[in-house]
Image (cartoon, rainbow, N blue to C red):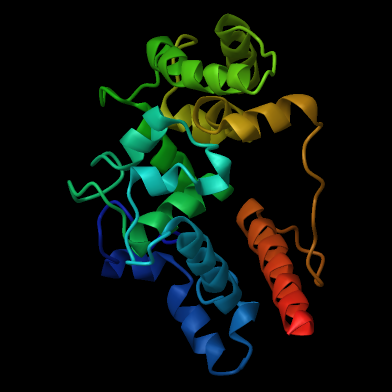
Length: 249
């Protein structure tokens, strides 16, 4: 549903199926026994990474996580204000104060690949607190302040919000010049930098002190998406850790 753009509808419509390559991918599975070749819909490796990440934060392993659990994700990289919005109905159909695996999957997809169209929609819903279809300067400052506070707590100096805001407006060039519409984010490949500045203090710090990640290609020469690269690196690390445990046993 994430790749088909049907998350917010809660179902896959016949029209959505006709416009997608989903049915063709199912047909191709009959000819290819390696399900991991299809990284868009059916990768076991991707599922394994998602489930292991869910298991890490689900400390009592009851198949649900709450805000306290989610504070452990990436050592508290996501601010409390953002967590409150993630647990709200802004990006979910339920009022429950817990997440199941489906909710967590959507969060992880959005967090690890902020270039994906559905990820942009996810974060826009999180950041547009008043639901007016805009991320205003007020909302930007409101979400960035906890990021600055996290950096301060770690003894890390950061730019003022005014400087960060000017940088983001210069990079993304929104239509109205004073706030961001969803269409502005979808048009700019640099939108990920804005989202990190408002959502994840660790990623914001990393992007400010590095020149960006290198392109990673698969065996056919195709560039991996941020999500594919994340899963590939995580899966490889998990397999190496399992081998080390087996050797010790």
